[in-house]
Image 1 (cartoon, rainbow, N blue to C red):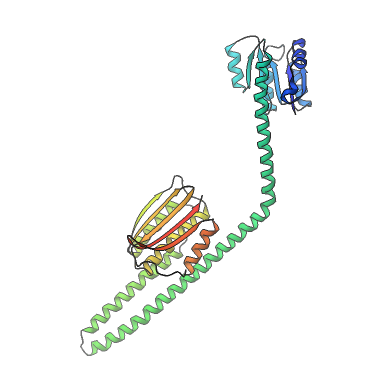
Image 2 (cartoon, helix red, strand yellow):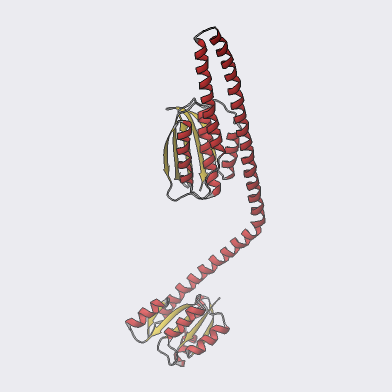
Length: 358
């Protein structure tokens, strides 16, 4: 299974090592012999060598020079240096050249074979890892068309979800404006009749009209803010903090934000899911729950990205998910995550929980 090349300018030493050591016990099937550095390079060029054992002091090309060339041209070969001198400079250079071992002559067979055994075990482990890598590569290449198809389908679904979400928001704005204008016209007509009769209730009706219009404008601002897409060049935390700052200014709410991420999250799928979850959570908390105070917590725990959003509005009281919540649920599910929207008792409000594996 393994092949060894022994190099020494003393021919009898090479032949002795090649013939007297029980190499077969260590899965060594070929033992090549060379008596100079140049001859060793020629053999390595013709045969597949796993382990090189070389003397240091040789004429023309030393063992260190030989290993230096081997390291450059055949980096997978493990090298053992033999020398009759316990010279620190030799040992230092051997380390620099990444020699596996540095042995002093005369070398006992047991010492050499122990080094050979360690090398062969390491090489077998590398071969197993390489084989596993090849199998993984083949499996990925086999699955690549399917993965591409799934990715394309997911992207198409995501784009369709965005279109449907925007259509829903457009309808919401239409409903808000239509309801507000109708109610305001009724109030103004009633106020006009009362003012004609010098009834002070007419002023009260006008004030109600003003309140309706202000409330409608707030709802429209929130809906329009939801339609705005995040900055794709920013990381997740920057996007969320920017959205929260604008939401607090436009919707007159307070958001207590606690984000603890060890590294910036930049994966576009994760960013869109969490960003839209915050949008939907705050929008629904304001519109349906009349919430004014929100608590956001985002962190990584047990290899999960954990998102929680609580608001002090009316507790969530329905088991039927609307379009926005359904879209959010589908996006989370695509990433292998879970979503829970529930009423909370202590403190009273609504809690949105999302967990996505990372």
